[in-house]
Image (tube, rainbow, N blue to C red; front, side, top):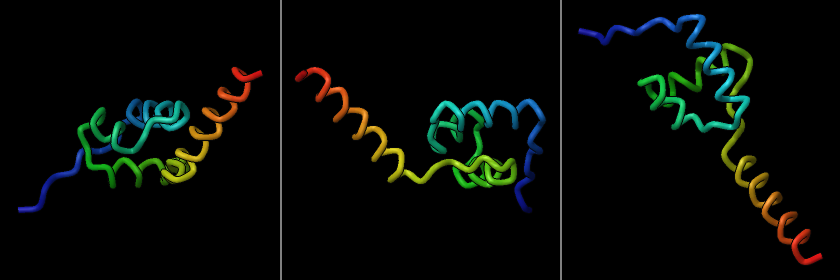
Length: 74
């Protein structure tokens, strides 16, 4: 018997948009919605707000850290 899929409610979709905008990872969103990472990523793509690639997020974090270190030095 195939697993039944719960439909995404408008409230779920709105919450997903907020999570993507705030920089949450697909893994974190999957825990919040109790759905697979793939399901969360697919829904974000359907909404036109895909999660950014992980390497881009890491690059941004490292750039912020470098900027903070430079400002502390002076």
